[in-house]
Image (cartoon, rainbow, N blue to C red; front, side, top):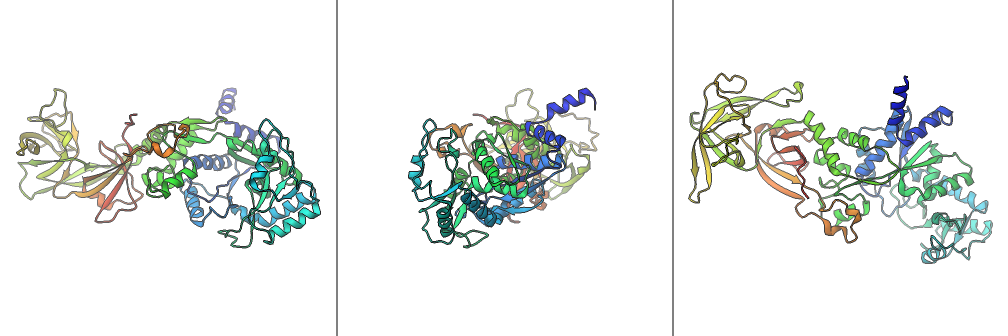
Length: 554
């Protein structure tokens, strides 16, 4: 490798990759093992996608592997529905895990670890109420005070903790706390609660347990049990790292290490599971996979591709400071990908009837339309062409300026894949509204066979009135009106965009009858669309993924 290549490689590495390469080079680790540890209390969103791409991507890059571990230590909010959705999302993004694991797999081991801390005099059972514990913790500028139960003997604590496990004490009456330092500048080190009593049915262990470990106790120890080499999480867990390291050190177990990166924040979007759940429960959206939601299932339903999300996550990189990413960047990547793979089809939203007078009544002709000019392998399809067609109303202007290249009285325009037509007559109703155009097609001007010598600068799309398929278009906009929703001090629901969904009844070429959920389409001169899961053969529904260009206006 040349000096130049070496320097370019160094520049391209983010800070976690630098750590991994140093660990591998020094022999600290022979291989790396990462993990993606979601809590199954909701659906994954685009922020989780960044973590998925980071953890699985680093493992792939360095020949390692990644575990999928569910942090299922809070049975009240967790459900197998969320477990199944998370697995589907990770697979959809293109990743496979080494092992599917659960924190609940380790409940017995974690319990043994807790007893070990008690026996070493490093944990105690506290009978204080939660309010009392919070008050005794002090403030960031004032040290905390010891609990009156802090000096219980290991024997007494062990007896009480075993009684907690046996269900002999009511919920909320006792907790187990690590005995660390009530004067630590890190508030989380002031004797954190590591076990609490909760009589709740667990989605995997049923009613076997009535005490459950808290995050700080379960997470680092689960990493250690699995021999995770690089435990990567977001910046809000920086204060937790000290607890993470303390517990591993005192328990004398495999020394997993935690590293933190900036979480993903997108404009016009919320990433809080709590807020997303509220949107669902209050009916502001139609479920977790509503195409306006930033969930992976919502993005998938809207027509996003795994590649576009992976490319976006790669582009924004891995930083040490939180920042706000413009959602237009995400839209750029899906637009760029769909441009390469989406078939171009003709759909008319606001129809104006055109009668082509020199085509006999009932005559139908096949026109050949290319599927995607960006993909030579995509081929073409046949679209029926007849005497009466629909075009978009805004593709005709009665009083057109000189450089208007679509249809106008006496003007010519090419119909996509068909003929050049010339407008001969404008038909209006009693109110003066244009209801029909009478045109004729130019002889020998058919696309691909044109010998007419007539030149046009405009091409417009159309559908046959005799053959069109009625479709419902769901056009989505930003879910919120302000870019930085999290900075708003009031109720975030006040910022909801009332116009985030528009429903349009449109007229489509008949090829769309064969559309599947996996197909991607560009509706010519409108945007990119995908078939929605609610579609029925008698009612086709298409979701707008993104426009042909960024048209958002504040």
